[in-house]
Length: 417
Image (cartoon, rainbow, N blue to C red):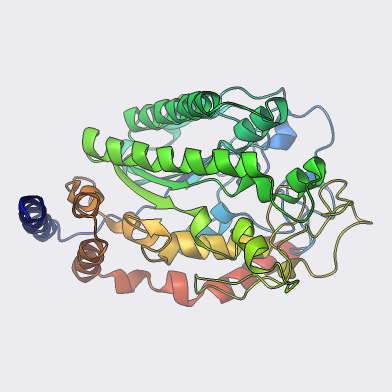
């Protein structure tokens, strides 16, 4: 009883402090700059500038939905493209392209990237952050402080480990995830040191359900246990890290998108719920339409089309698929993820969605990051979100959700005509 009472008074005090802080900040912060870090999920064309060989994503069938291959590992756009559109800024260009317009940020993400060490022709997360630091003077202090810093990284670290260590001990799993999280922490702190304050992180997908992984391990119509287990462990520690940084770093704000929570992307749940042979992904997130095919890729050969994506192995309707090739998502899946990161509720993204993170004042207290964690309830977090919506005229940003489908069509037209 005493513990419950102390929690109640903590939240009451937290809510009062937070509300007072809102009253002191009548002007919302509106980010006009986006920086992107990660691997092939977010790569918008960097790979081609480090590779001595022809990059698959530079040729058909990649880009087939938008009519042109652009170095993106998709039939069309990637998540950061849509987020830039919802923010009202142009799509962010690859940092390694000397022709890039960097006026609204840059993408440092590159296919094959890892946290602990990457093969040739790519950049580790640390190298991406150093590249940002080397170029930071291209943006003002104000632009860097208000910018959104988007991260998705670590998948290849765990897949490489699982391939070399098929039966690791629990201690080995913990040690690996601790190393990777430590690397991500160092990267975030480095960006913070260069002025970054608003961080958006997408956690790892169920890695054992990637078509390429299932096909390589040959375990039938089920996801491979170890990679997905490692991803779940990583995701738990990543959220713990963000909460810790929210308490330690002044002005640190974050948005955490949980890939595991939406069933249209959670292929492990898809397999369990469709054992009867029904091939339609069930959804808990009210976004777009369900996918007809979540078990195999649109493009490729083999039991799950996990390898060999080419013009002679591509499906006729990519929007029906979650995966375009053995490891990367379709334009439609990226679009739906972009919607969820931008405007979803606490079911899949917390403590703020990106639309909310966009307008939070830079010096707002960390109460919003910690109150719900202390009380153990999500109701208080929703109350705080409503306060933000009232104080900062979130209606002015509603175009980012209401006009998403037209924006998607405009994106296609900009490539084809």
